[in-house]
Image 1 (cartoon, rainbow, N blue to C red):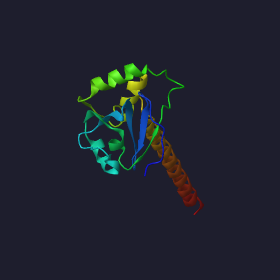
Image 2 (image 1 turned 135 degrees about the vertical axis):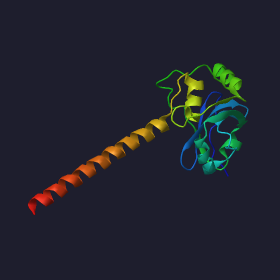
Image 3 (image 1 turned 45 degrees about the vertical axis):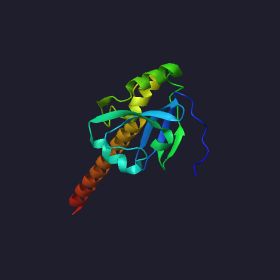
Length: 162
């Protein structure tokens, strides 16, 4: 049984929590969303769709929200409304509907489902999960470098003391 989530408004961003990442769609009304999916992904794919990120093409589909969500959790998340002015809902829906059926370039880091829906809502393609992953990887890399440097210094000091 699904938890009660408010009915989305046309133009709302829908964040779907897959096992290892978040999938994004845009609500277009009457229970439907438009979203960008690699050809190997299917509605309700859940974690099995993670392998679809290895492709360089994607399809724009219009499907029922509950079919896309499957057993995963989701929420309405218009998180950039305070930074970017959303386009009028009628324009968002028109732009989304015009994309349905198109095959487009797909790149995990620059042209993914989150970029797609943010461009439809705000006119600005952006993906926070890609930015967060890159920042996390950078921090981890710096941390490893520091640990390595400390190890080298301790090793030198040990040799000098012998």
